[in-house]
Image 1 (cartoon, helix red, strand yellow):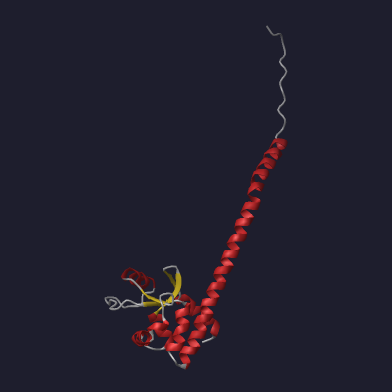
Image 2 (cartoon, rainbow, N blue to C red):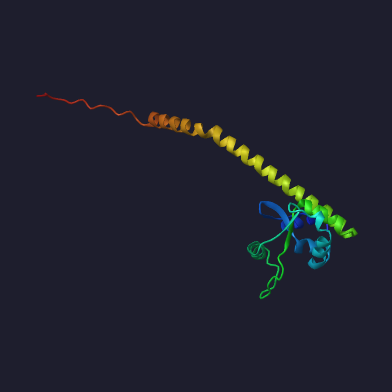
Length: 170
């Protein structure tokens, strides 16, 4: 799979929870080619490497919400354990916990995906700022253009001639 396509696929699995860009344990496990249970056991054995800003466990509401967004379970199946969400730093730390060649390669692609998302977000912010500046700059031009059009309309209308009244006035 070409790197660009892989980064695009990984980027679709990054979601925002609690104001942070994260990847869920089940998505990471698929990418690393291990069961989610194995990934979580490796994390629990090295829990000191994963403080709260690197990894957190989802609430039941968040788990149901993420499940409905990325339908991963078959109909009728329920989740037994609350999934873990890993921030970019947590994903980087996973490479030290999962020591395989595939884990290293996947981690590189994931880091590229996070970087690409940051670049896209920055580009959108810059674009929004430029559009706001243009709107402010040309807002006063709208009124000026309206006045100009009114003046042109008045010039295009034929002048109204006053009728002279013939006869005597009492």
